[in-house]
Length: 74
Ligand SMILES: [Zn+2]
Ligand SMILES: [Zn+2]
Image 1 (cartoon, protein in one colour):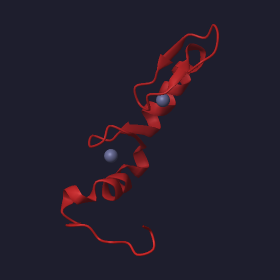
Image 2 (image 1 turned 90 degrees about the vertical axis):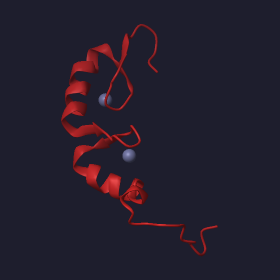
Image 3 (image 1 turned 135 degrees about the vertical axis):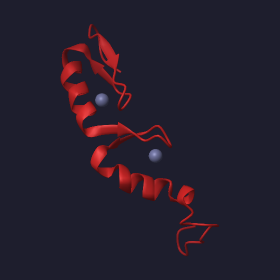
């Protein structure tokens, strides 16, 4: 959220409210570096999208079946 007289626009890439004065810069940056994960619709750095999908959505790839209990974390 922005204050007072700023006109804010929401960046489509990361869904942040950005003041209009900064929006074009912000958007250019986001378009360049961020991408929306097609699985969870979260903004992820393009360079990290593979890691993100591997980590966050690995069950979709069949790499992990069933739950592993993690001792000490419960
Ligand atoms: Zn953005
Ligand atoms: Zn995702």
